[in-house]
Image (cartoon, rainbow, N blue to C red; front, side):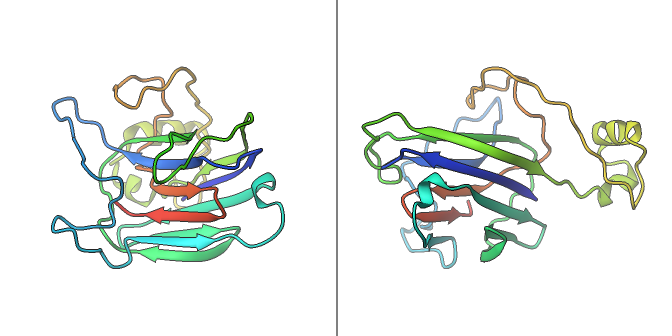
Length: 199
């Protein structure tokens, strides 16, 4: 489960997102598309993308909680604790890193940049990892850290507080990123809509 509570202050354009990034040193993808909602024949993939409108006053300056739960069967997306979308299309099954970013490049997703300074304020980032597979020793690094916290067991909740800081370059395999055995997928756009995309 990946959870973030954030707000975009002073934005009248731009996007905030958390993504799955797959990195293979011997592989360089080139994509001629800006959205994974179409198949290789250009046909819309049912339920691959959903736009959820936000309702209320001053939404861009209030904290919003976004969450998605990832299981082998589906991705479930929540907005302020309300389930807004579920998707079983191409569930990721490879390890990766978490990236959270804000940008405006004039493209179709983000639109034109704001004319004033924009601030992304993050109140909370929480990642909950189900360790049921670790009982068979499949996740040695996590088990070592969990053991220091009193586990592992079926009832122990391990808190991994190791955080690495530094410049993050998504095109490199550098170790200055949060070392997660998760692929984070969720598109959070701030123009009164949340775009959720399963790639």
